[in-house]
Image (cartoon, rainbow, N blue to C red; front, side):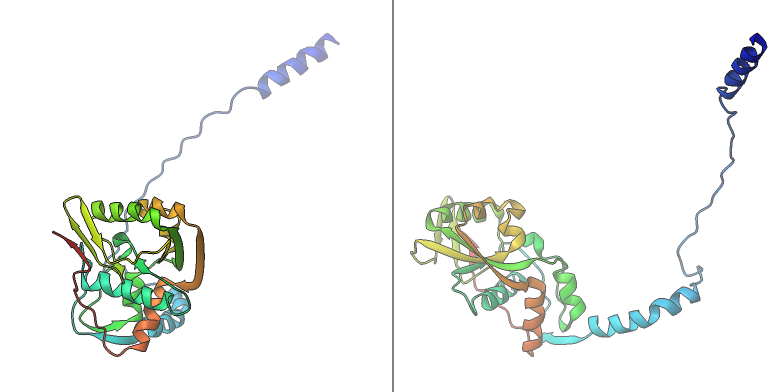
Length: 233
């Protein structure tokens, strides 16, 4: 019996002994991605049909622009055009007082010459939906204070003049104000927390990018102006 216990104890102790450490010698090298790297033809054969189809869509010419468009504060042709298009399409079936977008949401420029589908996707790569937010008139002071310190955001159907601490505007006297904007901003994006005062929201079911695409397909030449809708004096 004692011999059996001794053998059992020895077996347990041997089983509990930690395994010896095994060392591996791992080596590697960088593979530069340049013209000397040959393409994998088998992989190209798989994605080429899809690439050809996608390129035919993304390279479609939608309209023509007589000028180069870029974003700029407090106002630019690009800022104004995007806001005007969103105001136009949001007010087709709903009452809208003005449109407010955000400067940071403009992610590219539009070239002089042909405007393609790819240009619009680069300009607006997000899936943001166009919505209409109704806020009480009393909350507009927060909106104007935000615009004053922001340096400028795309607006449409609204004129804002900021002189020192005084803000003048063209907004009609109404109990509630309806603002076309993106769902991202309506949820407080870009610190537009004043939308938390909303008393109603209407979803248009339209993505802002799709609205821009529709507009470009409907026109021959893109027209936008600088009309001093947002000025600092």
